[in-house]
Amino acid sequence: MLKATSMEEYFDQSDTPGENSPTGVLMVRVLAKNPGMSFEQARREVYDLLRQAAGRKRYQVPAVLSPQERAESSAGMTGRFRDTRKAA
Image (cartoon, rainbow, N blue to C red; front, side, top):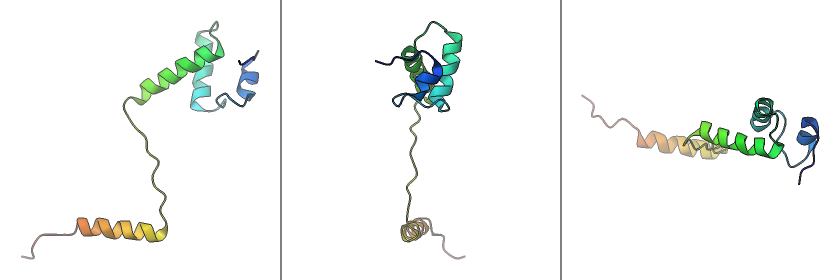
């Protein structure tokens, strides 16, 4: 169980979000509006708020390709979208 007496001590712990992370910044705002709330209650509320803000979006990290893989991918796309119209 976390035993922190101040926000600085809470954010200095290794198993808590960073103070400048989206979760940490929003936690400070939630705690300012609800002074009687514990850190863990604020953290749960922040996760719910961030989940609602994201909606149904799923974020993907783009693939990191080598120069050769990038060239192959580009060649494949060019082949799929080449001009299929007949010369007039």
